Image (cartoon, rainbow, N blue to C red; front, side, top):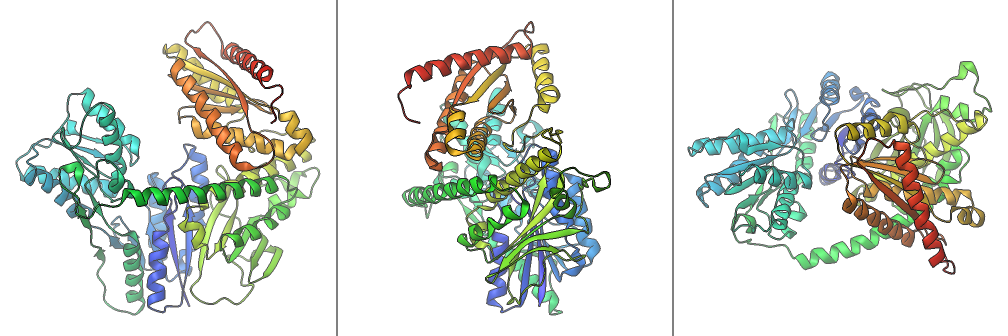
Length: 637
């Protein structure tokens, strides 16, 4: 029996299941006895660096020397120190390792030839369409794929005697808003070209969308190309010219490369997979095999149905987890839920000191909880393990053990390791066995978020009990809601407000208050009241931009500060939050409505303090609340 480690960072909320499915396909077809251990993080999702560090800590759990092979994908990891540390640890293990998508000195590589793939796209624009001015809108400047695609763009231009102008090259990230920003950037500088070469499809779609908003037509006014052949490229209007490849095939070849190494066969250090150039409407070409937009809409409709069902299940799970009074009780709610998602096993580990502190009314001096930021302590406990119809609880973790050998397993298993942490504080980890359904349907992020938020809520309540209901704020984040807590008032809110006043910038101060919370608490219980509060916070979090400082100001009160907002933007945000809460309320099916009253002010004068603005927004909120109550006095909740 051999085992391989796959180290990967998701993209925002999405786990890359292709690496797993491609590897498993090769293992199945070649009848190999190989188990896969996946160490997955979501370290590029949050703006909170400490949260991201807590995610990346999972790569410090394994001893790579214990594996027979390693598959590594670090293209999404932006902190250079973390990338380098992971790569160094892999190299030090002296275990055969394959890097995906990015060529790393000293490691094997499977992926595409980004240079030749982009080279043909740019060559097509120059030779087939006669373009002489081409702008490049790139992804992260540090990203290896982006560097290779940019190099191809530059070399093709030089080959045809076209000057490479630095002012026509910009970089940001791989998101849609990069394309929107990129178009405005060049438009404002009067640098619109004959063709935009975009580093990926997200950028291309964003650019086309922004151009269309301003009245431009593609390909009549200029050409646009993308890269990656995402669904949006073939569905968008116009269809985006792009480069396609199969990630599963990349992982398949990586697994094959490891297999050949194990057999002692001579192998190439670099293996490229084939790509497909898809020339479509956005460059003036006619799509040869256009994807059906109608079928895409049908798939999305049923996808939304499945997503709604999943969200209902998540709300139900969250309600149960919020009612738990111990870590074991919380863990015991998880196995039935995971079995319903076709997961065959679960192992739930936590730090021993946290578990021991749970049993104490007052924490003794010599029992202070460790605050581990990097790595995992030797003393950890298996809170709960389940599989094969059996269940074990409260077991010590053996030194160096990743999962216990509690029952006999057939070969060919997948074990996914996900970190459990409170921001950058390591708390434990969760192992899911053969959880392909969860990964393939992109459910992992929401599941882990729910578990971690519930754990943190429970932890907070236990600390509150130990400290005689005087919780010493340990984090700037509120454990129940995921928003900033009152600590952020002095650390973030006041400095932001004063900076805007000093720079003569407007800032919106919004006050949000939960409606009929007393009714919910009296009739459904305080845990359901907590669910209503966290749902309102979720609505705020979903609707506010990254520049916002959103705080849980009181028990059921929230304050939001957003710089550079005017009346129109504030009104739009208010409507968006109300609409989002309505959608959440429609799906949770708990017998009550989740609603909030919202007031705001636009501050543009330094004579008023932030506290004055909050009071003014509070008064406006209560004026609206009284008006709504008068209008709906006879309406049911």
